[in-house]
Image (cartoon, rainbow, N blue to C red; front, top):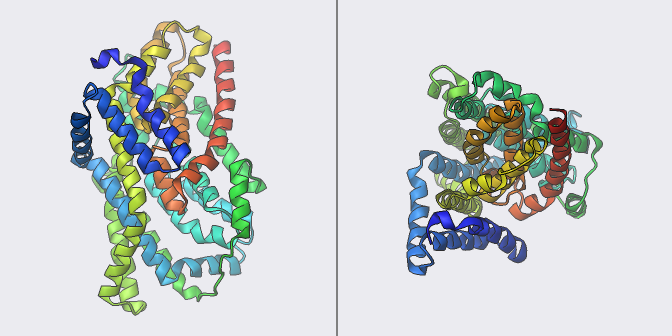
Length: 456
């Protein structure tokens, strides 16, 4: 069957992934089945060709510099986390923060990753990793679940990045909008900020949950389990906090420096994936040197610790790889393009902003990529806005917010996987506990877009 005749079958693979993940609670199996089913569609039902093409597509992921760098730093962050944990630096920092009364309750503990996630908007991966790694043991100390940490960092980093726009997100979005017939791309992009209702609502909800210390739905169950867990609170010398702080500060500073260099003096134009990869390697070296000369660790012990840390994250890195493969297969099937064209026909003008948000969310949810959704939809909705007299900034805000919403809700999103990795949380638990918050914020957002559509 030609690809043009597949129609709604193009959304079958991601739906299979979601059903199997929920049913079997085995995300790797779910992704493999989804990828194979996509290849079956692409090869007209030939199982042998589908298998060969699935393997070739997986290998082909490494031909992308961006994907390879993401996979490498996702693996290497395991070595860095393990070195810091083994050094006692995390426990020392937690003891220091609590003894100095800087963090003495759950509210303060939750504010740390929320503020870090909101402040580091240059690169989402840097933001997620910094906020997650620095807060893991602090959440354990105050009997807060790692699922809650994953929710906080996931729901602050992407929304703040798509609102601030002085980063790679802004550059990419501006490039997409510049390729459309709008007269002033800069004005449209920055005019979309107050119309990005989902990002704004999500940040409000995150800070409400942190300040009120209230949680709801499956998150409440996760919190009760954390309260019942017997987490040891050993006393570690505060001087050891340097084993965490120095590598972490090195990582952040190195990322900023490398983004400045790769951006030829413009930090917002730098390569986030390259900068994060190089910075993590330097941070591992710094952590290893600290432990070699101040922690009485031999080179052989440090090498073994690094491989142990990477081994712990290998299952999650595999999930990131398979998510990339499925996203590639979805692009080959034309899933996003089909859904966009199928839903955008014959709509009343007042409903278009809300439906644009829903459409962007659905595409991001089924493909696992917000940036891919930007690339698919921005070129479609900008001409629609001009033709129907709708404010282009309003529709752009709906696309950006909808893409982040779908990314938050999707178990096959690399951002979702990296957030669970940074928080030390099970992926399915992160998806299950975050989904009600994302749906609640999404529902409020739809109402706002319906109102905006009626007002005009």
